Length: 363
Image 1 (cartoon, helix red, strand yellow):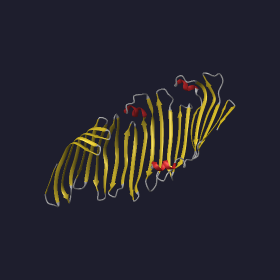
Image 2: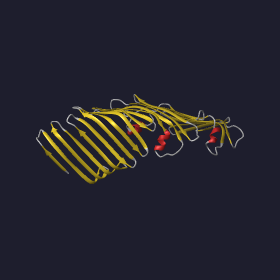
Image 3: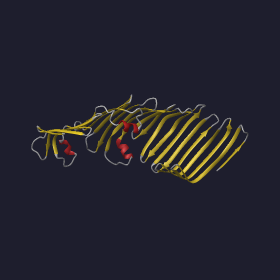
Image 4: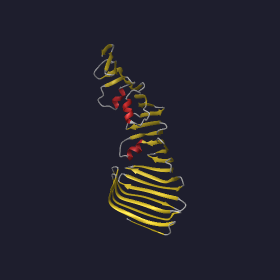
């Protein structure tokens, strides 16, 4: 390491550098690490540059061939910075420009590009305002990914009880075919995925609204569609999911609602609560006609009829109902109608059923 300073105390010029081989700290290793800096006008009107480079970097399970971060600031406190990372599976390149104010750092993203394996993304826009009191705002960042777009925003607000975090994400039109190919899945996959999220967590309030829409196509199988909404407000969590395969081939529905602990991110509090906050919820799966499934499922013994399954639960009881309607199989010459009901409350299990009019029961 070396460093030197010259000039009057009111306007010092400094420069220096350091280097290390086989560097290791906190789970991060590097074959070579070099640091250099240069400045002048310190402290009255400081300006200068900082440069950090690493080779053979290993961190978080990733091996990075080269990494570099550099910052330059002028006497008017305008700054520019860049980060570049190059590895077998990961690449990142970003450049920002901004200004160092008396109470905050304000930067705008000028360039952003990244890669994970074969998945590439490019960014545009984006502004980061970091105030020295701990308040941080990121907004207006857009990523182009797999034929779609992702818009991001976030804000961190410090409070006496901890930080309040809010995030927004809007992902639209991401193509599953491009996404799968980028991740090394070479298959006949199609469709799109969209996602919208608005989440706020912290000591002041906890709320969330997440919406997911997926349309997926695989080879010559029927199109699958899923729409889901997850909401959190006033210590109540609610999930609504509807899915379908083909026009009328199969459908599923999930409705789940529960009260939440005061801190919904506390896993211990969830375990302590158990199912005491669970409101009446259900899972329903229904296939109205099993016959067409034989086109995609080999050796299917069913040639017609329908089947449905409903599972319900609340804070005390779990129920299940399995029913068939005019079920036709390869082994029977007549239709089969079956209804089986199960109920579990505590350690008590009750079973009831009916097969073509014959009643069954067990407690």
